[in-house]
Length: 395
Image 1 (cartoon, rainbow, N blue to C red):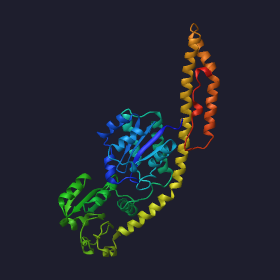
Image 2: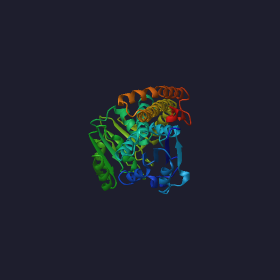
Image 3: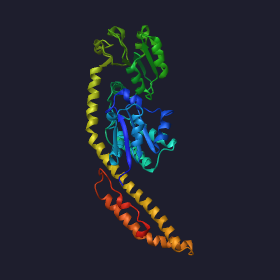
Image 4: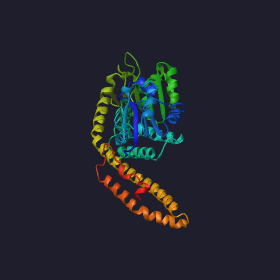
């Protein structure tokens, strides 16, 4: 038989966000019911994909997603080695919207954990997802697939780290309380900054954002006071004119690092002429992002080589797994046959005679498994018919 894994799913490559929203499975409500309907399966559900991995037929998984309002054209179905290859590509970050992003690896691990919690895994799925997580770690530690910032918000943090080396003990001011400010503060977590100061025209929004990241909130009128305290300023406010000019930055001994993420810009370009100020804008950051994106894409062949090696390792394990299962069933079958033929004999003799009869078959099974492993490492359809147990008549 072929490797009995399947995948049915949709992603940002095949479905718009509205369809992906309908397909998403909430871990607390939708997921338990879905797993109960699917039987043995692992569901990977993120903002960019919903994928069902299982063993056997993909029909129930396909019906589940179609029942959630997904059209057939949005779905992809993969079976056997191709399903496994897709899982490995996902875990390694090659199928992500941003190549090499790190969040997906934790999501793959969490999908396996939730399936275990609901008793929905079995040996092939366990091994597949464990191998995928191990591969994802190797891809990020042995290649540069995850190196460098590939978002503007993360590039801003990279630049700050490049200037200061370490942000511990520094004061970071964020001008604006929108999505870009939130993304930057998310990346800033764990850098050990002393204070986070959030400035916004609407102080209520500043207060809400500051509360999420342990910061302090200020209205726009307090901006001059905030600038005097800050070591790093990240500006992303919606404003029709400059909010920070050279006259707002009195002479200081410590350097001041400013990143203007806004369009129109928040910071007057003349600020860059001040000897103690270092100003970067969106164009600077986009150049960094594009350079890093190209570098990541150059690492893809290295990651693909790791994927092919992981596939070969899995198939080697699977061949051994099939042999072990076949040998176990063969021994049980022959033991029953001997017991029927010699009902008065000692059980020890039954086991000895069953072992003698099984020996040539075990050698044949192992030899055929070796023959399979010496073939192409990743065939499109792997045949295991040579591992079929003999019938009692053949013994």
